Image (cartoon, rainbow, N blue to C red):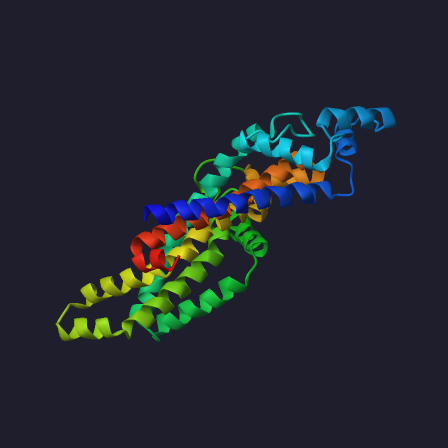
Length: 309
């Protein structure tokens, strides 16, 4: 297991370096001059002298690869430069917005796990019943609906018409209900279907038939089915965590949630390249690290995975 973990960690190092290089390259391929952008967002007339001075201040007068090495070294120390808009450190701006996003993603994840587990298990136990068919219909509709449309519908019904929840902002637990529901709805549909299908498939395995022959009770058999079904969902669940965090961009802007997704959209409109660059690297790194943790956890549960790599 130790050798497997070391190999997996060594493999992600070139991946992370490649991600950082691509993100740096994409920003530098932008036709807009970052020095001119930095001047305009601060309402400074971009004269030739001002642009030249700003390029020297931002280090844009150096060769491309030299700038990349400097930026990479600073990024390893979590120094992504200063924002063009307010000249504050990008790391500080992200750290201020990150707790709100993590709070929203955590509530959405809890809702996803709780509802999908219960719905998936019940649908598998009562396969092809009326409740199972209705649940599958709801899953089909929920999967097809985009987040922004669901958010607007929930806001119109529960905030405007029924006046049960606030429409925007982060003011207590009630303010997180609508955005978390919007964010989790599609994942609830996916995992309910995944758990149901996996449990139905395991119900027909030989070990379940053997357990029934031995006279095991229904709940004991269901527990064994669920245990083997959950293992197949670990990878998908692990990759849902970074998707939940990165997927808050739309939801945060609909509900005016003060998180990192809203910060990123604001940076895009203002062409605040340091924040955009830091956001890209952070989200990509989150995906890679979560994938690594899922692989390690899967290898811990199933030794065959360690032998195959």
